[in-house]
Each structure stands twice: as structure tokens, then as C-alpha cells.
Image (cartoon, rainbow, N blue to C red; front, side):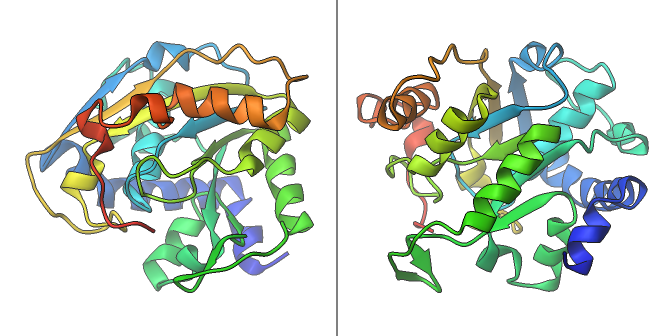
Length: 254
């Protein structure tokens, strides 16, 4: 286990990092832009472990950061709003997010974000900006399953910010193996407000939307393909939703 892994598992240290990241990113979500949250009531009665959030993806970091803000706000009893970020005094830290290893090692700032709970994995289809084909690292699967057994986990089944990219079967394998509560999330506006990494502004005054749907009713005995199809329909990234809404406009593919 690396030093970063040890640090991000220390609760008080992680809370401090949450506070730093939260205060740094709050203006981009709620002051320079407008964030609209729907379905936060679907979070209040979730178990403390084995909950998997599946979402479409528009930026590397702003998407996840918005999730963390919402989770902390809900812990403080706020419904579908952030309000002032006092919630970082006692943040909700029992959550991890799955991220590409190369992305999280990109800079000192991205390494800092790693401490908020990133589960770094090696992409099986892309490396260093080039298409590759390689087997899933068993250690990556083990890390995800271990985290999911203890807390909430956020994942982006497409593994890219390109809209309507096919979902990766890894997400369905996790669902079939771990049998978690699966909460679909639809985000919108982040591609317009931020650059691809989600760390710089492109357009201020943008409406950012985060919609938490009710947990999916999943038959875990279904095939991996059937589970993945259900997930992609739920996050409105399957073919039937193509070109139906503004949140499907493309940004540069990851």
C-alpha cells in the first residue's frame, strides 16, 4: 500500500482534504455557475455500504467534485441544494470514486484529488492517449470490490467524457459480483462550464444539473450484457437517447 493509499484511509486526514478541495471548488459550482440538484431524497435512506452510483461523464474532476458536495450537503440535512459550504466542517467521507491511474498522476493538484477517495485503475482500452487492448488487472477489481463492500462508490461506466460511448462491461461485472444498490445519476452542463479536466472555466453562468434517480431494480442473475444495457438506459447514454437532450452534446473525447 502506497503512502497516498494510507493517507486517504485516515478519516481525519481525509476530512481535511475534503475541506480544502471543497472550499476551492465551491465557487465554480455555486457562485460562478448555478447548480440544480434533483432527487437528493433518494440518498437519505441508502445503506452505508454496497451502494454504486453510475453516471454519465462530462469532465474528469468537476463531475465527481459535484457529487462530493451533494453528499456532504445531504448529510447536513439539505435537500436538493448546497447552500453555504459549512458541511465541510463534518463532511461525508465514506465514498470512493473510480478513476484512471494516468489521469490522477497528471499533476500535483490531481494527486491531491486522489486523497479524496480515488480508486485508481489501469484502463484496458486506452493508455497515454493511444488505443490499447489489455486484460483487466485483478488487483484493480479487488480494490473496487473491497471499497464497495465498505462504503459508497462512484463510477462512470463509459470511462470517457465522450457522450454515447459504449459502456464498459467492468461496471456490469461489479454489479453482478457484489450485488450493490445501484443509483443512476444524470449530469448536464459541466462540459459547457469547464474544460475537459474540469479544473478551469470555459463559460460562467452555466446551469449545472445533477439528477439522482431511484435505485435500479436489478436481477443479478441476468447476463453481464443485460445488466450493462439496463445501466446505460438508466443514465440515458444508450442509443435510444441519442440526440434527445442538451446534456448529450459532445466535448473532446477522453
